Image 1 (cartoon, helix red, strand yellow):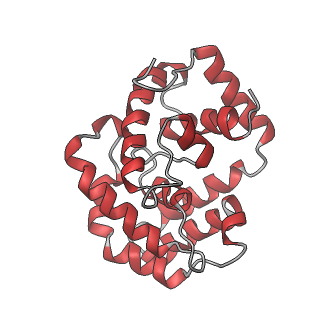
Image 2 (cartoon, rainbow, N blue to C red):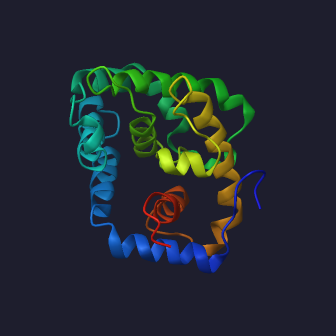
Image 3 (cartoon, helix red, strand yellow):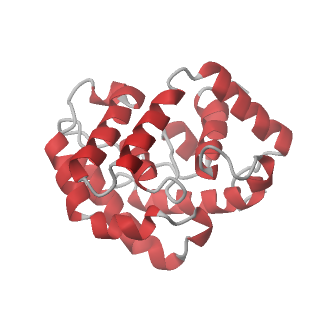
Length: 205
């Protein structure tokens, strides 16, 4: 068990991954976006294009009533590329308390850059950060955040809750890393998100 969340056993975790592969037809969109970001690293416009492509499909409900501003996203990436590069190739296992302030600051900057009209989405931020540092920044959504006692609905849009979630996903990763092949064709955090999405978002398992 985690401090205040449940650790699945191997069989349940694998069932979650299998359910994701079987039911989530949009899964390939992530790999297309991840590849585009990786191949064009250092080019803020192309990196922004990869992120926006994912968000327009994976988070289309949010942007239905106000599209994201591509220029704001590009400028946010450009202004914060030095900080992003610090996290780019790190693994979640290296997360420490010293990272808290930089993660919260980066989260809040992307929260503004990824606005949909006048609305802000902590879910969109996590999707973007994961593409920028796929082994360090975890994905979440409302239901997943709730399941790990990191609810952001009534907070100041989720920065502190996201840091708490990162800490919990670090512990989760330590438990479940033996459940999947290593090396794998995706990060451990992506596998954890597939399990979380299957169990808490879609309730497929």
